[in-house]
Length: 370
Length: 231
Image (tube, rainbow over the protein chains, first blue to last red):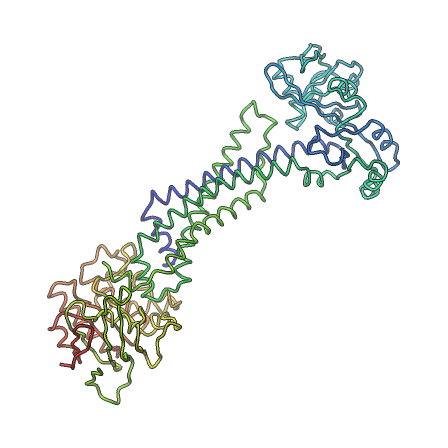
């Protein structure tokens, strides 16, 4: 109890300094939580596009970005004919811009695609998809920001298209995207006879190893990955996640420097007090525990406040109409745990030098000078 | 130089043999071959002018510092750079300084319990000891008071209680009443002598006050880092 009081007392002695340190950790934690959650949400959404009613993604081997992947139509036909395959849906990705919106994602799909099946049709009818080569289906958000409706004409990139339907999907990217018949998309993006990926659903999950082996054998320039495997290994996702953690980590490092500064000042201003504790039998371990305890207290309190601020910020992001559907703000427990552990480690690291300094204080020298 | 008026049958608890100590890489020599023997239960006053080495000798005897040369033994165990002073400071020796050296944000009770926390003593036993000591020193009504609220005499009595919490057999006091007025100083010193006598504690006290020193069982003069013949 007295040990705890020694820790807390010193923080209370310098309230402003302690608050600044707690705020430093809190804002770092909030930044890390927000960045990581938003990016993980984005990754999950993109993965969701690929894994819509499918288990496996087939794309060109050794491409850094799926937008550059080219899978020939023959591969789609061959794979569809394999008995273990329930359905194989080619998807062509493309990005265009309109006058007001620099980025609109286009999906070239067939009329059998699960996205159209699963979506809620607000306007139009699924049975009409693909009948008109110039007919496109818009996600609800895309229709909103293009200010268009069923039957009207919209400019997408350099082309004019007829709105054949408007759908609502849970995925922000899809909801803000444009769905074109595959052949139209191939012509529009000058990728005749190919798609970006094929999403595959097998009749039995147990056939996955066989399917991969068949792809390796029949199409050596293609690669088949299970959805989770793809999410784990796709380099763009890796870069995004690494960037998120790195940016968050830099924030936390700054917070850690704040803690280090506080702890150094804390030790320097009570050298005599530490000497008194030494004379009264405090060991190096007990002195270090006191210093680390102080920094851990600052870090944990900062982490808790930071998590609250971060959650509040994510909640606010979710309420912004322009971001609706694009930001998945569900905070993962693992992320929370990692953020708390990192904050704690930062605090401990920040207290390392002050603790070593405190352990080296010689009572006799500190007490000699008044 | 060995200075002993004590009965040869008394147990030796402190011993310094040819102890030398200097500071600033030998530029300032504070102790020059000091020999000292302290017996169980006796009270010893170290007298001498400022800078004569009284405090340094106390620090060496308490394991707070190491001699450049010579040997220090407490309860027949020699102190050296390889031995940790923790056992001494937790169980065998208590220190009282000229300034009370209490932690201002803690209460009287919490300050006194610090040595018991360091030594990992049972809280119940520690509280019992605290009450015993504060009853004797007349501080039992001030247990919950912050240090700032205590008078100078009360603070020094608190420091005395803290030094005795873990029942050390040796008390090293460096000008324990030096910061107090004459009347308070006398009262605190009376209490100090009474407690060490009751508990059978060996007291070695550095002081300028010859009046107080004369009330100790033995008075040792120090000059220029040396102990002179006992008075």
